[in-house]
Length: 447
Image (tube, rainbow, N blue to C red):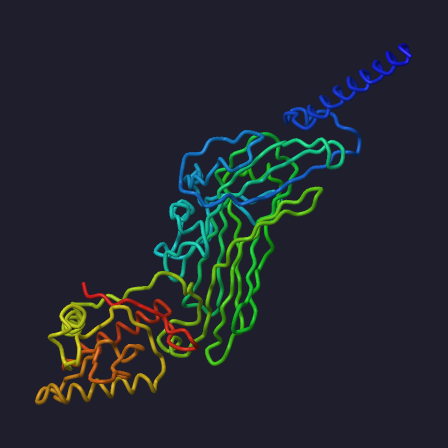
């Protein structure tokens, strides 16, 4: 009995010791440093896992190189400046894979007044959320920080350890046109500020984009595919750009109006399949409105969600118009016609291109000039100037019970017509629509 008990105790001790050793071996494999992952592995058993994530939108801060086992959450977007091409030349360095990306030296951009640098894009907090930041109706951008993590697993999905982390800042800039025979959107995607710890080699990273029509019909197509190269090749490039052009065709009658969502797409591929991140949509609107074509704008596209543009009245060319608008905005109680309550005259207006509505507004204003300025209107070389203008939804019509939230005044005809010409130029330059459910807003300012 005692010998059997001793044997049983010894057997249990042997099993416990073997279990402890196996546990230590397992723990060592799971927590092994990246250097261990680079050592010879069992033949045919290694699995590479790679994931791509976008870090949460956080305020600007300094950034240090991550640890190999960093989970990424301690590395907020730094919005650091991109490294400029040191040569100062204009030649574009073609990538070895022919994927369409290049150095930062010579990206395609429109006129300087509308261009956006990646530094400028990443310097705005609004670039990091939603549709992004718009410099104007023809230039906008989105910014993010990408995080690629590579994990090596020795036997299938067992014995895994982090091999490396890579972070990059990305600025995706969109440009539209207003005076073209074609309706297109140019996209320039900058990738730079790489920070790497450990081994991220051999993981393919594709950066591209999509354009999806959301209303009006027609098509929105990209001229070339995205750019694919291993992460370590992207890192070696430093700061590079990838660009494409989207052609929009068709749209709803009568003005061939269409809207489309633009999204950037980034994907890494490994043994567990693709890992993809997509941006929020950045909306573009394209049209061939006849009233804009007549004003010389041509067909084109805008970002309708951009900040409200401002029409600044030219006091030199149209001093009487400027004075009338200034009084309407600042001393409405001194203006004609009278109102049954204090006037509420807006500074932000909405365009109307409806000819019937414009005639009705103008008719009401003309009668007010006749009634409240007898002997002065009608008169030779004199126009009835009204604010808000007849070409806006806020014009003189649709007032009731003696409420008149508009002003009229007889002024010099040349002065009035010069202001009208300048307003139409503004409508064309900013592609201000007033039809098809789009009564674009604009602000009126007298300096």
